[in-house]
Amino acid sequence: MMKYSLLFIAVAALFISSCKKGDVFVEDCTGAAKSFLTDVNPIVQTSCATSTGCHASGSSQGPGALTNYAQVFAAKSDVKKTVANGTMPQNSSLTGAQKSAIICWINSGAPNN
Image (cartoon, rainbow, N blue to C red; front, top):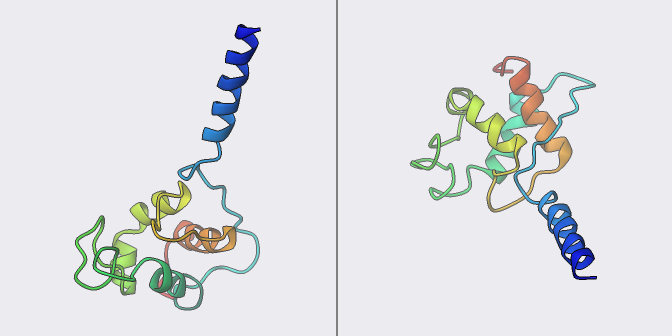
């Protein structure tokens, strides 16, 4: 009986840990190409560039400020990685559509559009 209890606890712990923040996200890039101006920048400004403790002007956190195209473009590999694995943004959660918009825009070369 003890053996089954330990097995149940181990399986439950594995299941719970599989649902934690930090899992890799698989984006959906079907549909219209994403635009920095209309799709990506609004997400970044409301979820990432919110304070100097995050990525607003003057920030030294991670890749630094993400307040304009040049800054987001320069940090695109970090942005893609942290959005995909769910570690950013720290103070809010992005929807699947928001994550896809950012990642798909980066995958398409991160154009200034």
